[in-house]
Figure: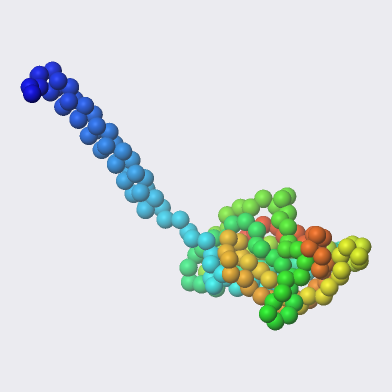
Length: 185
């Protein structure tokens, strides 16, 4: 079998194009990786990096507004983004009572960077359970608030007394996204 010179040139050209394309495909991710390595992202705060506390409260006709404060207790800067998970509970082991807090859509999330010792907070609104028909609400006392810092899966249990609707069809709580500093600052 003989290969003509034209066919050989054609194969070399095709091989050169394939090799050039492969080099380009390899060099693009390498450049992206180098750029990413030069600007490391600040990681999300893990539950063990923050201390949660119930902050200041303000009552109105029919609701209580309470801040949930997150303080970075680690030696590393971390970030919080979004809404904390909040529910009310009672007993030991903890048993959730009623529905978890819904997110206040009017409070758009922003990325919060927490240096060591810095604090961010989210405002929690708890509607008075007695505002709802008792037959559909079943007002029930609670002893704890269960807090999940944004984007975490490990809860923090805080002593906090409230009365909520045991019926999970009734939404009694909403929470804003986290903001820098203490609520009201």
